[in-house]
Length: 165
Image (cartoon, rainbow, N blue to C red; front, side, top):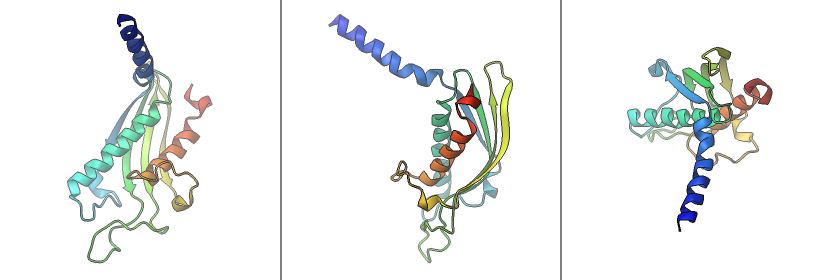
């Protein structure tokens, strides 16, 4: 029994180690009241905004796990426009997803190494005008899936294996 416990704890330690060795993230939401579209529709406004921010912060953290150990990714979001629109639904304020209302996000980032030196930084203006025609179904059943897929594409292009090392 003791041998099984030791083996299980070793396996768990190996499984959990990559997440703890990955890069860290910090996301700052600058002037969110001025963002183009984080309207809640019929949901509670503050709660919806908190859900949007939390979901995207977790996604940035998930992406940063692909970066080498000791690096830190700082993100400052300056504008956000979620896919769809809540103002075209008539009396009921629900988010209607149409090609016309594509997702956009503006932010700047800084990637630091373990010595706190900037490896790379840039101002980014992402938009996905073809968001409804993507071939991937990865985030099909998740909230803010169009935005997550857009961030995935940016991250992959920006932090390829050559850039991240």
